[in-house]
Length: 95
Length: 95
Image (cartoon, rainbow over all chains, first blue to last red; front, side, top):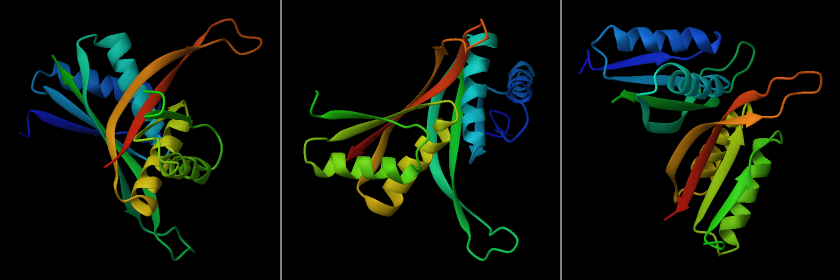
């Protein structure tokens, strides 16, 4: 499984950094499937990344699965309640 | 179809407004399925809305489908290139 499925965590970098990571992972030859994981505001970036990769660079890329969920985050400094954030996982498969 | 599938467009309002819209639509009795549509930064809000509705208010709600895509937006004033924005559609089904 390890060489067949890779995970890329999407954060605050520009979308193109993650698009490049996808292209690199697929062209290294081992990956057949890559999962983008993001939470909070980065969810929008993750969707952008998937769309840019698919429409502009790798036409044979398919979105094979999308899952949403909720994760608990530790409280910020000075706060004492933990926060809930939404998460997304987008799986891209090369045909 | 019209009374079985409703669409809620998620924008810049607080997530709870949309959660209320979902609860209202389902409890009016006709809707079996509701689709949340959002684009750009509102994608994160749409995921939050689905998660809040499902975890806090309607435990029998299921995410039956998620689709992502790209839409072309007309250029902003003073610009002459149209922009691409990512979109999401989240379908919620009551069991």
